[in-house]
Length: 564
Ligand code: DON
Image (tube, rainbow, N blue to C red):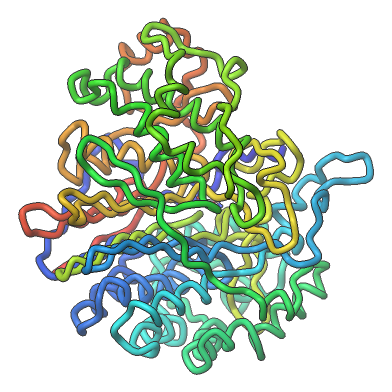
């Protein structure tokens, strides 16, 4: 079955304490980093202590995650960074993977036009041209203060000298071993020398990855996209029937893009534009919800959940039809984030009844020219960074590049590989997100900064495939509508709807049976407590309050916030 029911989210999560108290807030004055890996957060905080800014810290944390959190931290994948600079400007860096030059519209279909099972997720064809190294280097070069060595050395040391594995990572390795073991280089990294699984407390050393990172430290972009690293990657592609060539690698560039901007109850929302759908959908949903007194109804009430579900249904329907890489397809971004458009889209909202996804098409818009992981950082100067990065599914394609020591993504599955055929997250798509050479596949990653009075208030984002956008929506609403402090805003139970399949998923034990019954009475027929995992999202977030920086790692993951 192609639709893996968000399995990657489940597999990246370890703590089952959704019913426990909200996570503790870490407090600081000068700098704060929240990520899925405590070791990586410490790297980021050390960089801040050593005079780096939030951009240096985010880049250093990003490289460290490639070593300490290999299921999603990466140099073989891609990501998006939203940066608010101390001077008040906001920029975004898109280092999403691209389809190789030889990719074709129907490359994952057989002669009968049917999808070939697994080809877009677990094969060499599943791999998009990686963007992470280009993005991290470009961001650092343009906005960092420290040298390249200062932001890369900690990651290199963690790879070369190793670090002690904890239960979380050992459990992940074991769960993914059956697929990783198919590739000798992957087996060599993720098992001990004798082929047996690692145990907690053992040292995890990655010499090939260290050498690759050293080449990047010495030669910058060329250390990855040309020379030995590129040759190793291209050779593995040839060996395994993949498409990425030396030319594809040499041609890769990250792109600086204008952020998506919206407003919500006196706050400014800045988030990621296409090729992510995240910023557009977040702002669109907030626009639909703004006229409603959600704070008055109260967190977790059926009235609020009904309104959110209906906004989600309409926004995800638009995603399926309208959104794709704007460099290739005329995506109507300005219309989709317009408040009047949202009002029109919500005009048929019935406060007493659920609508049916089959009756909700995508909105009419006039033609217009044209195991993921999240890091949040703030520094004392007012720089703030929201950074989400991914290989797509946990451990990506499960293919380690022999001799180079890093995992390759399986991001090609984020394209609409066949019209109206669900991807791994059950998301549908059409021509806007069809495969074309050099095109970037549509993403749901939603690195987001919320500003109040022009100053950063909240930095957030999450993994979770299609549930990323609704996770960010809920964190933002918890702060803005419900007045929660950060630990509650991140810790409180979540739910999700994505138009199709037409069902609401809720976290187990998250919402009262009375609320669920009220939603069912309105006609929300399929309300499934997710059984395949322990939670939706992993929103490591940072907030500024009364001159203090607060950091929270989501209780659904095993991350840590570090501040001082
Ligand atoms: O870009 C996207 O939307 C997906 N490739 C994200 C994958 C993801 O969040 C996996 N983690 N749970």
